[in-house]
Image (cartoon, rainbow, N blue to C red; front, side, top):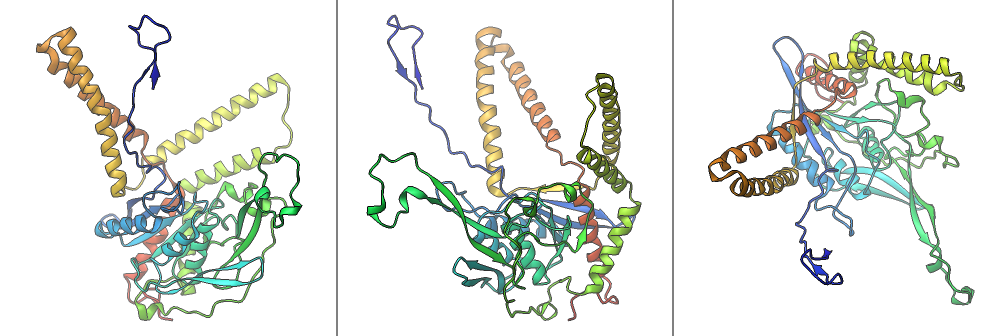
Length: 447
């Protein structure tokens, strides 16, 4: 930091103050987990683990993280298992994609060796990317929660687990539908013949983004435009918003290639699978019954309908009186929805959060970094101004202020009342209950 010293008589004098920044590990966009206790009767609950994955990241390139998606999810799966999770929900609702290699590795945590995705290049050559590690980290019930914002690598994971009959897909009617790969070509460095180059001075670098590959699932279906359909669909405002790949101009059409000849014998492997159609129908019927009866879904449908009306509205009055009346009606309606939401939030399921080790270390370091300078300043202030006898009082006041700030931060970070996650957890609880009843055909896969 270049400064002008306050005691310098010469205005041209400058002083360099070195500021050494400590190592900061960026953990905000890493995977997180929680354990939800879902009540099944007055005295029994089922523990459902949830892993929220914002992207598929890795430690490659200059902007890479210190860890990888697969390593982080592995750590969280072990923590959830140790905490008693009987099923796991992989939340990919806001995951826009990332590293293809991590999507393949992550899928391998839930399946033995087998195909994950087919990639066709511009020459028509198709390569099959497979999981080659026979070890599975989780062989219990698995749900993948998706939305129209789940794109690219997220769709590969969801589609591969669905094609392999390993996971139940819950969420919007389908995912985003991005089944292509683009590469940026720098035009001024790609000229094949030197004599074609212009003698004129070079302009600023020009680049273009070109589609070079397309993804296909193991069954041969592309994720392009169609995305990955859900086995159980939950109502959402995303269904009528133009946010999918098919809403973009000039989107490439859906296509297909030959399916990969591969079948997993889940019964022999003793792995829980939703491959039995009767199980999926049973879980979907139970979910539909809740969607029609539970108050939270009535609230959700009112919210969706209000947003739909606003979206479909093509004209708004410019009359001042009518605009004011409209604003008042909207505010009253929003306040009513907020009151309902707050009342529902009080009935949320108990949750326990789990963080990665690197995240816990970073949070502890941040608290220490914040607390120590404040305490030092307070101690100096108490000795210089108030006196040594009152230094303890000032330090205690600072401790109370820090504790109050931490408590306020925790309160602000409380999880919202997530209707989609709650229903996914109930679907998982239904699945687990069916596994606990040997008389039912849906216990373990028998096909």
